[in-house]
Each structure stands twice: as C-alpha cells, then as structure tokens.
Length: 229
Image 1: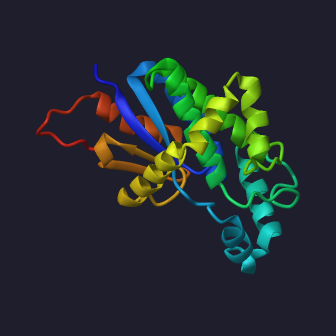
Image 2 (image 1 turned 45 degrees about the vertical axis):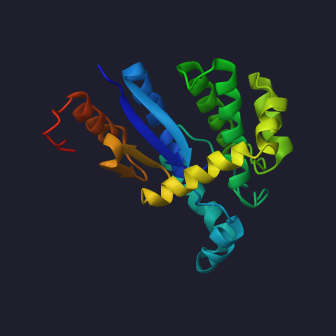
C-alpha cells in the first residue's frame, strides 16, 4: 500500500502547532509507516514585534497575548505554557529557528544518506524540543546558542549543522518552504496538506478530522474517482 503523504506547515512560535503535536503523535502511533509526515515551515512570527506589539496593540499587547496563550493552554492538558511567556522572553523572529531546523534536516540526511524514517523521527524530536524550550521553559529559541544547547544532548553534530548554515544551503531550503507555502496558499500555522494539495486542514484541527482525511486516502480511490474529503 502506498503511504499517505502529508506536508505539514508550521511556525515554531505558534501555540496551535504546539498543541497539534499530541495529534500528530496519535496519527503516527496508529498508522506507523502508512503515513509519512513531512515537516515544512511557514512564516507567521517572522517579525514578532509587529505580530504582537502592533497586532495586539488594542488587546493588551504582550500582556494580552500572554493571557491568550495561557487561556489556550488551559484547554489542552498535553501542553505546558510558562506563566511569563512573551513577558520574560521575546524571540524577535521564528525564522532563525526555522533556519536551524533546515540545517538539522540536511545534517541528518547526510548521515542516513536519504530522507529516511530514522532521520524524520529525529527531526521531529528536535523540533518538538525547540517548541518545548520556548513554550514550557520560556527560552529564547531565536538564539543560535540556545538552539545548540537544545540540539547537542540529542546527539546532533553541531559542526555539520553550522556548516549547512554557513554554506547557504539551509537558507535555500527555508526559502523554498516559504515560497511553497505562499504558492500553495497556506493560510497559517499549522496546516496539513494531503492528496497532492487537494485537501488542506488549517488551524486547531482535531484528531478525528485528520483521521477521516487519512482514512479516505487509504481507501485508495481510483484515478478517475475524487476523494470525498
């Protein structure tokens, strides 16, 4: 059976992507190798000062955004949010963490020789660790030194990661993500793209809705039969 391919666009500073991790874990636990999730990035918090200080100006600015995130966290026991999030630490951008993760992906592929299952699992683990470092521990994940401190205990080769940044290749891969997100009209984070772009699920999407779309694709409609989802 051909696996279901899911392209998953997210921003590391988006709380809804943080919330969605438990749903992704549930999907992968249930389906294993029959579902392949490809992590890519979109830019929602590319300029956090403009996003929060300006965008939330009439709703309390950083304090209002902090209250909003804590309210979201109360609804989802699977996530922990630091009480001083965006008050104590304010990463200026998500793009530097995205860049770091693109370099991580390239360094993992250099080791495995392909975009194999083991590298995909490790990539997801590092990405989740970066999110946890921000949302739970209130660390500035825009900083290179913080990114390295998160990645090193996981056994990653920091020199290889840095090499991909300095060579410019990580920048190119990140630019491709942002350009493809725009081309595919990704509305925000997180977004699940299935069935070669025909199906898109955006935002706070529950497990059962994701599962319904996957099951429809696993049903393997014929070439002349459209998916009902």
